[in-house]
Image (cartoon, rainbow, N blue to C red; front, top):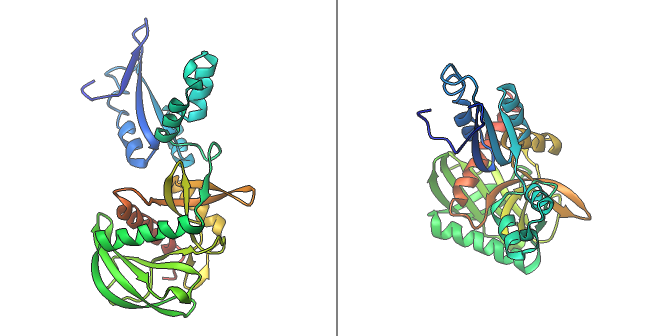
Length: 297
């Protein structure tokens, strides 16, 4: 076809099925690569060819786009693979190392495996680790006076780094005894003298669902999450509206086990990832774009 593809099946009638494999959540960029087949492979070159997309998870809005373009798709999850192997009588389903590896390399559907909130000393050590990375990987720019939307003032130490999404600045609040949470002010492409934030990474010292941010983990993977809390001009937006927006547009909603039920949250960064600050910058960019439609022009 003059284009590299992942897998091609051909039956005895010479009809072809082209399969594209995408790891983790399907993104718009990955989908656009598949849509390039329209008018190229799916044309007079070979009108019998069909295209199928296989990913670990496909957000609802992208499913609709795929269906609109007549492309078949399948979500390949751990439970699907395990059920398939069990039906085949494969002994791998009883191999604990295989199951552990499978859980680590394939993203889970929200209903398959929840994250749990990090608390106690583990939370303290995780915040300490996060702040150490800020100090080591970002450039120090000095002390700063900060203003909360509710009118509170505090002081912090500021750091910045250039990302592909813009200049990311994180100010770590140093007046620890003043708050019952670990506070980080975050801005993207804001003037250096700005004393407000685009978002705040507020992590409660003790479990508190009223505070926006939390650290959660699954299989020792630690992630930064937002509960869908954000304000525009000191007005709190509906949490359900925020969560629905990020689920439909970005597909980054996960669930944490909390008080015996599953609570949806926005996963926006992996604490141990090499691209931690790029991920934070992307979330700030997404949140700023979301807030724009609520601002009065």
